[in-house]
Amino acid sequence: MNPAFARFLPSYAKSRLWAMLILGGLAAFMLSFTISCERRSAKLRWKLEQGKTYVYRSEVTGSWRIEGWEKGERSGEFGNLIETEMSVLGIGPDSAFRIREAINLIREGQEFKPTIVTYSMAPNGRLYGMSEVDTGSAPRSIPSRERSEYRKQYFEQTQPTYPDRELKPGETWIQETKVVFEDRLLTAESQFNVKGWEKVGEYICLRIDYHSKSFIPYESKGRRLLEQGEVKGSIWFAPQVGLPIQQRDSFYTSTARIVPEGEKPPSTYIVQSVRLYQLVEIR
Image (cartoon, rainbow, N blue to C red; front, side, top):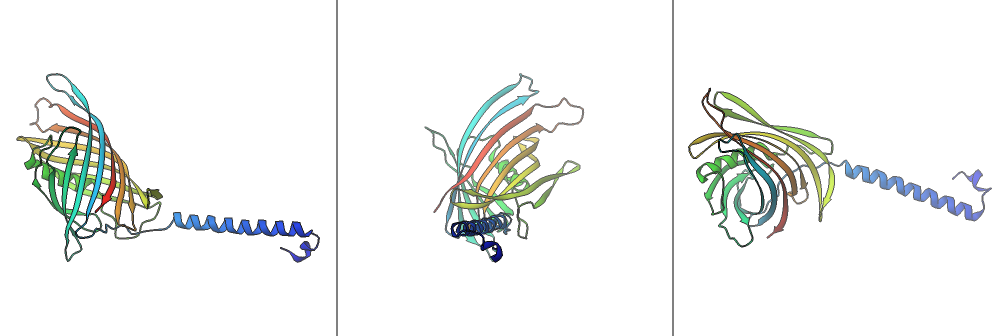
C-alpha cells in the first residue's frame, strides 16, 4: 500500500484494503501452486512386492455378430465379470517380476476353475515369457493350445511399456510391434497421450489416453485366422504406489479365416465391447 495514499483512508478502509491484498496474494499463490501440481512430471514404474497379491476386477459388456456365414447372419450380446489375481512369486536380479496370474470368470449360480498364467514383467510394464499352465474350466472361443500365444501377442501389442523418462501432461509416445503374416510385415501401433492428474478413490493418478491397432494371426482347430482390432481407452496410473488403479476401454475386433487366393471369402466374426478394469484389493 502506498503510504501517501494510506493517509487519506479511514482506519476501517485501510483494514479492508489490507485484507483484500492478502487474500489476493493467497489466491495467486494457490493458483500458481495448482498449476505447478497439474504440470508436475513422474516416472511410471510398477512397484510390486514379492509375496503380495494384487486383485483386479473387469466388467465387460458387448455384442457379437457373424457376417457372410452361409447359414445366415448370427448375433448376440454378452456380459462377463472377471477377477484377476496377480501373485508376485519373486523378483529377479534384473528387477523383473515373476508373476502367477489366476483369471476367474464369475457367473451367478456357476463356478469355474480359474485359468492360470505365468509370465515375467519388467518394472516399465514390458511382458515376456508368458505361458498358460492351467487351462481352467471357463468357456472359451480359442482352444488352450493356441490361447497362450494369442494372449501373449495381444498384451505385447496393446499394453504400455512406459518410457525411460519422466512424463507430464501433454506428452505422447508411440509403441510399435512388428507382426509377420504370410509374406507381409504388419505394424501394430499404440499411441499414448498423457492427459493430466486425476484422483481415483484414494489415489492421485496420471491419466493416459491411448488408441491401439492390433494384428494377431493365430490358429484355432486347424484353421489359420487373422484378428484385426482397435481399442481406445484411458489408464489411471498412481506413481506413488506404482500401480494402474483403473482402466476403461472400448474394443472392436474382426476375425476372418485365411483362405487361398480365389476362394470365396469366409465368414467374419465381429466383436464390440467396453470394459472397466479396477484394482479392488491388495493382500
